[in-house]
Image 1 (tube, helix red, strand yellow):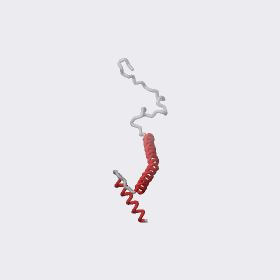
Image 2 (cartoon, helix red, strand yellow; image 1 turned 30 degrees about the horizontal axis):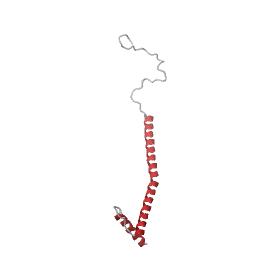
Image 3 (cartoon, helix red, strand yellow; image 1 turned 60 degrees about the horizontal axis):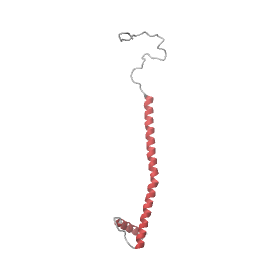
Length: 113
């Protein structure tokens, strides 16, 4: 650098730009990045597969819980209707009409056998 702030251009040795360097050093233009792009796409796909696998495993874990809840609800309904038949009464409250309808459906099915 000169005293006035300008740069000095020096002539380089012809051997300085050996086989490692090309005629256009530093490289001009944007790199193609085919390998990097492929790795990014593979990473995104792998992440999507992991997320889908976790969601599917969570859903499959919840299936037996839902089946158990349905069986418990069915058993509770049958027990309540058995108690109502033993007492000879009908259920009162907001579930009374629903229980009466369920009782009529089960009675019709039992008589149809």
